[in-house]
Length: 329
Ligand SMILES: [Zn+2]
Image 1 (spheres, rainbow, N blue to C red):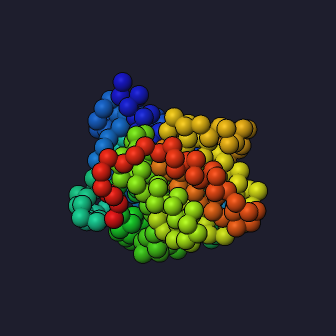
Image 2 (spheres, protein in one colour; image 1 turned 135 degrees about the vertical axis):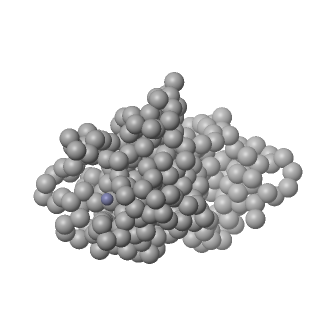
C-alpha cells in the first residue's frame, strides 16, 4: 500500500521530469531512512531541493557512484539521495522518503519555508549528480537544470527553493556542487521552470482547454511566435531542432497521444506511431502537455515544409467546449 503510493508519486515526478526535457527517467525506489512515515516509503513534506555531486569523473563510466548512492556505506547507510543523475543524463528516482543527503546544517528559510537545524531530510529533496572533479559540460549542466526544474514544478515550488548542498545548507562543511553558487544554480533552472504540467491531473480543466485553444489559435492565425516563446513549455531549447522532419515526427507523436487522451481520432491523420526522442516509452499522458508540444513543433515544422493547419484544426475541434469564461489570464 505505502509502496504503491510511493510508486504513484514517483510516476508523477517522472512525468514532470520528462515534461522538462530530461531525456529519460527511471524509477528505482527503495525505502527511506528510519523515521520516514508511511512504512518508510514516502513523505510529503518536501519544500526544497538540494544539488550534490558524487566526486567522480566521466572516465569512471556512466553511473560510477549509483550503487553507493543506493546502498550507502557501513558508516553512512543508504539511500544517500532521493534522486540521482548520471553521465548518461538519465534521472533515476531512488527514494520518495528520507535520504541521508543533507547532514548537519541550517536552519535556513527557503522561499518562505523554514527548515530546522540538522533536520533537512523530511524537507529537502536531494539529488546526487555525477561529477565534482572536472567542470561539467554545457550538456550536463543543462541536464541538471532541467531535472531541478522538473523537481521544483512537481513540488509546486519556485526557483528560490533550490539550494546547493553548501549554500545555504552547509557552508564551510560542504563544497558541492563544484564551483556552482546557489544563485548560479537558480539562474540555470529558471529558463526551464513551468516547462510542463505535473502530470498529476489527467482531466482537462476548462482553463486548460482555453489555454490549449489559445495556443492553437495563435498558430493558425500566424502569430505563433508568441506560442513558441511563451507560455508554451517546450522542453527543446529554442533552435535546438530545426530539422522539419524531426519536428513533424514529434508533433505527430504528441498529437496522436493527446487526441487519444481526449478520446479523439487523430489516428486518421497520422496512421503510424512515431518515436518521440523526448519520451521514448511514450508514458507522458498529460494531454495539456502533449498538445503544447504538438502545437509548438507543428508551427516550427510548418515554417520548413508548408502547412500543418489541418492537424491543428482537428485537434482544436476535438477539444471539449469550455464551461463558461476564458479562465486564462
Ligand atoms: Zn552533498
